[in-house]
Image 1 (cartoon, helix red, strand yellow):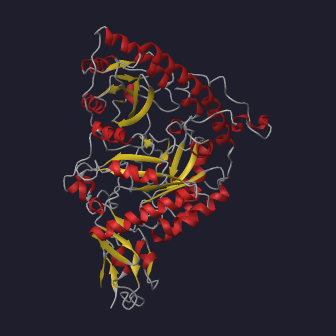
Image 2 (cartoon, each protein chain N blue to C red):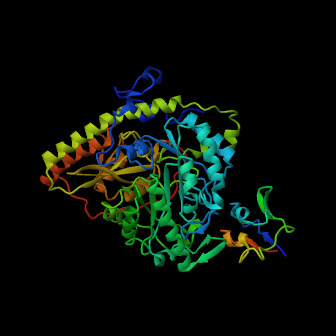
Image 3 (cartoon, rainbow over the protein chains, first blue to last red):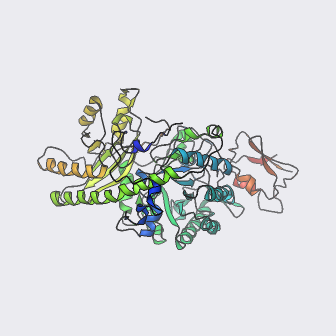
Length: 520
Length: 63
């Protein structure tokens, strides 16, 4: 099996040399790699100890998600609650959403799969257990058995789990014992009246509870578990599913409640609702939010618990960088055929050192670009959204037609920041473009002023321009944020001359369908 | 007096196996089954049969 995401591809289609800061080989680093001795500072507003924990975790650091890969192992099929947005009977390998998985694994199978993936993907930094049920249901037996073995067999990988929180207070000691540094709790409400519309039942203390009783118990357990974890210094991310008409306005209350209990990050995700999934919400016509509805709620929560916007709502057996899923390369059958696999962290170690070295320069160059815009544009121009075709490394390095998602950046006088992503069908397959697919892409990025690509054909380029979205390939292979700031400076000038129009007020469609393992 | 698992509807999640106080549930040929000799329907142990209370597919039923 070839190493499909090679380091070269991270540097941009293999056409660019690694940055000059590429560190020497690990053996030359004389025990203390230069990078881990404090050369790369985290964001100014983050405790250095916390930065140390999150900097290589793609789900806890937006920056890390451009560089690092995660892997979920599906060892926990049992669940202790029923959610109206979940139906675990349905599995399609082309389907990407939480709670779905193609193969359930025993802890032994999981360890072998992890070692196999770690050999193939040097970007791998995190192993998570996210179900497909609840990682702590059935007493968390498989979850902890897996982590216990993994800690011994591959100590460089971070451990992480996600849970609905119902059984969490019972397991906080064990979580701390296995050095599980990152826990995600799905909290959709802090008011049982709202909860009763989301959870038909829970199983707690040997009994099935329904209605308000169920929601009240779940809420109390979630808050208690959250407090117990944060008081021990374990980082907690809170996931919330935004369900229009049910908890959309309420999420502001959720944000405040989890912030006051020490949650590190709040991730507000759109409801995935499709009748074909057979969920209660799907079958009863409950819709998900539009892109702008989601952004409005996320923006309103900004200033509370830190917002996460780069979540891809991935499967419980996802493998790879967040925007991709390479699970099909690592099926049980293929792993069985690989024979014995040894632990060897050398490739991962040198990759991490490379990222560390690149980062130090990145922080300085972003700050300089931002200062330039602030000085030359002033604060009178409203921010704009830009869609970016990228395959990672914070660079514009994907062809328009090959993109399976676009990353969305908001850029304005106060800088450029990642605010989301939009999944699309690949426009170009086998060399020719498809008109229907192009319409889908246009709908997905309709609120954007421009789309940054490494390359784009004449035909889609014209369609984009006709729709009022400017295709931009002049920043090919450059860094996203610096390019976005340079573009914004130019845009502000053209706006002043009346040469372009603002796209304020436009909305876009969130597509919640397939994210397949197939690569361009 | 015992419960059984409707295998066509079972998602093989194993939640029932973990809850059964009588260790009556096991995985046989890829599907969970209840040993009727061990099943007590949880009488005298809990308010209701634990497998039925936890099952997400509601497929644990009286035999």
